Image (cartoon, one colour):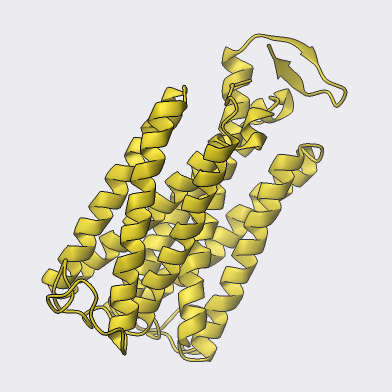
Length: 321
């Protein structure tokens, strides 16, 4: 068992960072969904001011900047506290990585304005946001009571199929989110106007670049449903007594179901701002949850391979000494 020490207050702080990041993702999604990306044409100031009149698109764009600044400051404070009070090198490195990512994110955000929203920079900005969110979620997990009370399971640690699935999932989700970000920032959100068919067919008869990006995102969505279904079925079939894996797997399945439903309504209702914005946030939650699942399963495998085991508890779980 990895000791966390009496750092419950710091654990709570990491959860605050996660919550603020969700707010930031929501604000960023609103900027894109409302077309407010250039409502403030200069950076880092806004019309030469720190706090311009919060009207129209300025509310979304400058509000996003203010929240981003708060998240960056929180990430820095979190990293300083972790380096001061936390003994595990892995957590310290993750905290430092999160700061580097959020500062890079801020620079990319500035470049999107200065360069007038080039798709390559905007897509990179969106993908880096996903990486930052997943990182702070993992930090929160590693600082939690769940991590402190962890007991390795030989059944999970030796399940090669589950290990392969949870390794593939985050990579597949990231590719899917890359397609989604590209679709959003190239205006391909309604390149295919019907759902679940595409121009009345399962495969479009003709392809443009916009149709290719949009259709790739749809194919990716159905692929993710298949991968998540296989993963959750494996957990529920083989590891029914592992409540943590059951809970995370169930949460991932719920996020994916919600994501598919919102994707359909975005097409049917012609990209309503609230649903389109929520679709981005839930996509980030899908990725972060899949990363959590991968981290948990990998920990079972690592501890089975590297730790000494001398007893099992009442449920048959191997317990490290």
